[in-house]
Amino acid sequence: MSRVTVYVPCDTGAVSLGADRVAERLARECRDHPVDIVRNGSRGAFWLEPLLEVEAGGQRIAYGPVRPDDIPRLLEEGMLSASTRSALCLGVVDEIPFLKQQQRLTFARQGVVDPVSVASYRAHGGFAGLERALGMSPREIVDEVTESGLRGRGGAAFPTGIKWRTVLNAPGEHKYIVCNADEGDSGTFADRMLMEGDPMSLIEGMIIAGLAVGATRGYIYLREEYPRAGRMLLQAIAAVRAAGYLGERICGSAHCFELELRLGAGAYICGEETSLLESLEGKRGVVRAKPPLPAIAGLFGQPTVVNNVISLATVPVILARGAPFYRDFGVGRSRGTLAFQLAGNIARGGLVELAFGSTLRELLFDFGAGTRSGRPLRAVQVGGPLGAYLPEAHWDTPMDYEAFAAVGAMVGHGGIVAFDDTVNMREQARFAMAFCAEESCGKCTPCRIGSTRGVEVIDRIAAGSDVDANLVLLQELCETMTDGSLCAMGGMTPYPVLSALGHFPEDFGVLGESSGTRESA
Image (cartoon, rainbow, N blue to C red; front, side, top):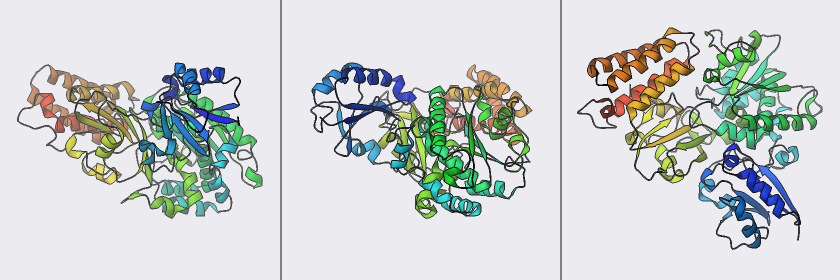
């Protein structure tokens, strides 16, 4: 029997469902078989995890969800051969509808490569973008990223090329590349999945960014709650350095770039770029006033590129395939693809990478298959804990930045959290204010005090105390937070509050309004 490769995911989500135990049982049962077990990343179809893949005849055959006790039976049924009669067999991985219907560019290698093998990464197109960038001038690289239409995938959606050009043109003794890997929004896990399943794409993107702006050092600021991602990144960085892509004289060129991993301490506010920079410098994570922008005076007062994980990990495909290739995906000013993350009360949670322009309804039903509870969907929050709650009337809005802004919502980092008809939207509004009160850095009064007062006002509404007057007060308080807060923490907390009030007024004791008929403020 020829050697067979079996892929077992090492992703945190898969591990939480027993992937490590499956890998251990497989290793025990296959002691006398010519089997190589590779721990890959998750494909993102979480309801099928742990998902095993057997490489046979140039294709990968999927089995899932697999439990440790399934392994002996799967082996007896021919899992290691090209044919099998197992009920757990899902067929060719790439033909699974959930995956086949996606447009994976940033996540093309996700679940495919060995995350810490340079050879595996190169075999699937890795470092092609960097090798091309080494033959380009900094301005040519910046122009390529600008022409692709790539915008920040961390939520703000600022054009990446413009940010890079600002840093390139800014005078400074040193320049830095900082990756914001402090993924803290509810319902988001794309950054974690990529760092655990394809970390070298992030590393390659950061090196290219360094070439583009003249930076020789980069930092990955990783949230402390992602220990597995941290371990994978450290292994990947070491492997990339050993292969000559990091350090002095990259690939024999005159360029050098060093990369360090730094851990945050669990503060949500450190996902805001200036607070993150304060933390990187060893200070308390507090928002800085702007200007100056980090691109002018960022880390240690020097010009700094601060980009999200997905933004940086998308750069290699742009350099490898060219700006027109990437720009051909998407709609309007929202070019390329975004990794949407389905979470909450959803039957088929997971990661879906699609070009901008698909609708929320398609994601919720064509990919997510409706609610896990089987009850009707009532509300969907898009863009993390500061995103608006959307009723069914808005589920056909195209998933692009401008279209969502037009209905008082945001796409953000692509996190989608679903709620069925048992949800109380007043309680969700209260949660938004309470979350802000808990996570505020405390620097500005509208955020620090406004969120605390917001919880008190909503509690008075819940108690039936002078409801009309408190509803007016709540709206005025939200206006103050939006207009007066120093950063998006306080400035966007009103989004979920006002959308809950506007679309679901009956949950606040307001009569005579139909759910989903009013626009959010």
